[in-house]
Image 1 (cartoon, helix red, strand yellow):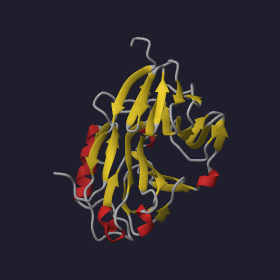
Image 2 (cartoon, helix red, strand yellow):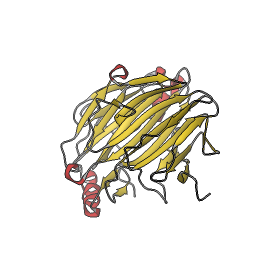
Image 3 (spheres, one colour):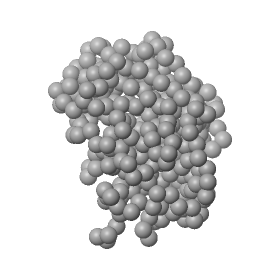
Length: 293
């Protein structure tokens, strides 16, 4: 449809991280590598693993450069350890924002049976590329409790602003470029328009079904909106969605866990990890993921 507000629909692909940890991978996509500064988007779960097997899903220490990772849980829990010496148990609703800058390594461990109980583990993990001026900044890890994040609830729409500015709300999460990232829940018939103050915008359906200009989108689909298009969506059934976007940063190279505006920087990061020049977490340094290939 020529008048559709949707520029592109991305259906999540399944990616197996090993030991039963299968995720829906949305970004990067062959026809759309980024939405604003968001260059990577994974949705894991809901996933239940037997209590005596939870450690099999662990993600061993691995490196990053040139990006911030954003870990946001809807259910379960996991333990983060990084090369700065930070250990943090991550719980649903809080924001854990790790800025790799010139280089960091971290692990994601499932050390407690509560990691997969109840409705199971459900994790949304995105990567936000850094502006060129910040690609080599000092690495950092910041965590923000759920009660520190602004929330709105009216007309059948509940939302939590994870990062950036939107809907008259401002998140305390420290970012490096203009963006928005929202967790929202819509009741049937509830309507919500995307923020207009950002050049690139998308929604991802975590669960349920929403209608956009007569087209329906369901679990595992990302709808990328055309610029300046009507962007109102309506809940068809109780639905959980993520809204994201921001200002584009320009082309980026991405290989494995490395992001950079310069291809030669990616090659340097490969060599650094292989040679052990990126430190391991001091409290989790007995194993690591080797460089692919």
